[in-house]
Image (cartoon, one colour):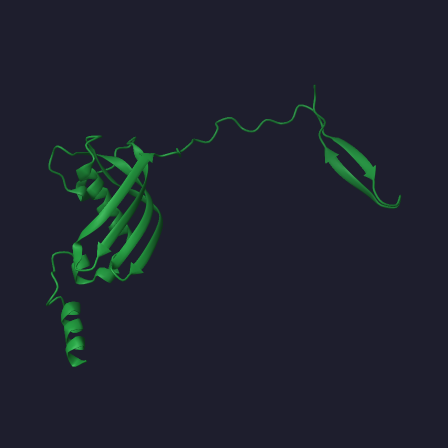
Length: 171
């Protein structure tokens, strides 16, 4: 029992584990945003087109599952095109979004496997974003060209009546 606790303490302190990345030191502390960034980085390296580098734009939804073999994330997010090019050396943190850059909707599955925290398995699919920002209409709402007509109808006994405001359609 004492050896197990001592071994767990060594791993927690990083003595037995590799300190190459934050996930190696504390894999259970992996955040969904980190998993999404890793998937986008993988997408940039694997995708031949477009030549621009993409960055995580907005994390839309996440689901984290702890399993016997590790941690699994199901993610939905958007990525946006940056000024950086894949052909040149770049640091993703230095890449700024293009003002009118391409935005894509993406879903990704990222798994951090036990004993392989530094090499997560990723699967990612992206497509053109379906939403676009729209500017409000410049013209104010127009008033109706005719006054509304009021009709009174009697319901139940004659002592009760219900008035309804109705607009008749013009032909």
